[in-house]
Length: 449
Image (cartoon, rainbow, N blue to C red; front, side, top):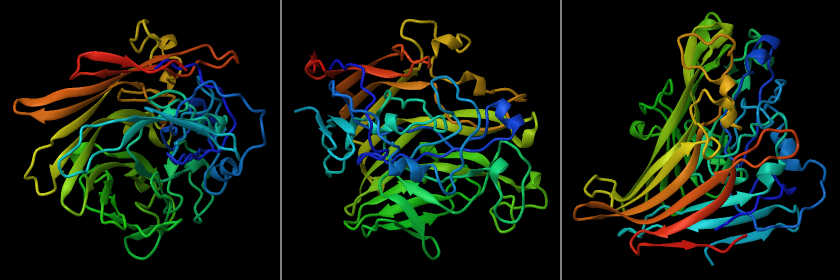
């Protein structure tokens, strides 16, 4: 399938496929020079494009306004390559498409079929494009395209917590130092599957738009979070979804957070003593149906370092990651090996055919290498930032036979960095998807769009 460069249509910030949350942090001058503080990695929603007619600009929609208000601070740091700031996270026949008559949001989905499992529990996967994920961006949002391309995405699902910038924390009675770090703001959570979650008593939460699902925040997983927080959502039909529960899945992504006010997690006698490692994202890592059928998700993570509390000594955190494997056809009692598998293969986000060593920064147009630190000290980088060096290059489905797994289907994604023509850095664009039926030894291309 050959894809033309999608038009930047005006649309709503939330699509029906993926919830996109936008938040950012105000930075003190010293922290701003270092790259500013942050909250998360961009995850833009899903869909595709077929030469739609562009619509005239309209005022900012309500979803954008809501996402940039309330407890979600706004960054003052200058935009890096590609516009926006890496100091923010986002909660966004063989294909189908539609245009919203109310918002002009163009969506296009490309399902990825997987071999069936004996128990019937198997992943529902697909690439998807939503014009609203591009339209909703500002200089205060993390504008790095997803691993699938600008406006596209493929996500398994996650729950995310918003932290605030310490430089802008005037709540709780204590004013912290004007650093680029993250501070506890309030107990909150957003799920891509259910939207905003509302805390109730004990460990119970519920979706704001309550559909009857039971939501629990639990503790005790060896996942890197200071008290091992993870989540379980049980739907009305009895299917359980776990987030951040399996250490081997690398599904909980953490960052240093300061509890600068009394009563906040990890609060200590001093600001320096009030830091602990907390999860900012819990990715889906296990699904169990009422019959004991199970599938598990495994991730690759990307780590980074920064100088916490305006000190040069480096502290480590997880700046983002990508889905690597889905194993399904399992049993929750461990009695059966996976009968099916999906692998997600990544490559560097560099210009095709160029020298892709990290030192050749011009060949990585949308990667903010200036925010990278991997040494013992991080002079000049005094805030966490959330970004990726990876793009999705191939998806392979497999079934287990007598001698192990055998490839069934694959999808190869070709990307490019077309010149945007607006003095911005080029963004990662999905150029084509090539579907190959491995068991039939032939390649099938979709029609050109």
